[in-house]
Length: 301
Image (cartoon, rainbow, N blue to C red; front, side, top):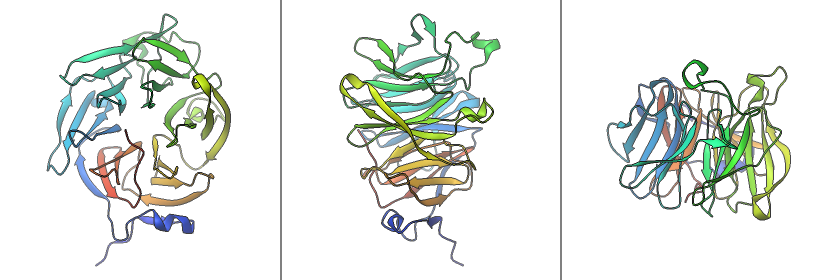
């Protein structure tokens, strides 16, 4: 008996984005809440976080099993890769941004803004100039363990790892969450899931224009869905957004139209493009990590 296709076409444009007959495959299971997948092209491996277990895991492409990469991980959440192929991690419990060096050592890049500790860094992306952009909502911080909140709000920050200078680049978010640049880096998309903390709060993706000196302008709502929470997402080379959702992955055209869906057995919190050609979606979904080939290529470094 043929399994139903995991792809749902909501707009004819989605037909060119998926591989007919492709299926969702499980590469690992056994987590409590998986998040932050990052593909390391040089070593052909995927690293992700299992937040409640305070560990990170590593899967070599094509391997039968994953292994523990780091434990404890200080509540590691979002991960990304810099231009030198080093892993950059948002450590929620330690309230800091770290970098794993090529020799395995860990460098603390930032843990404060204006002398005050971050809330709980959540997700990060690296721009082509090497700057690290990350969100700092108030999820995942255990006050009884890590102390009271020190910053007045929840914002997005830009970190220059060469100087250690941190700039606050947003002022009007409730709970900034996932973020990603367009392929040419002229646009920055940021999720706000403030409805988890504020009645009638935001649950949408906003789009900003990135100007000189990395100043942001605009900030209009790009997409909203009252039926589910946005979370992590990534873009392909055509500028489409592939977004984690409660029932799988939603794909949005650059004009804001939701054009298709991929059904996944669990809620997808975050995803990335991986594989040798960056044409496989690698999805962290609650207890497991899933992959599926697609007919697009993701933005990579």
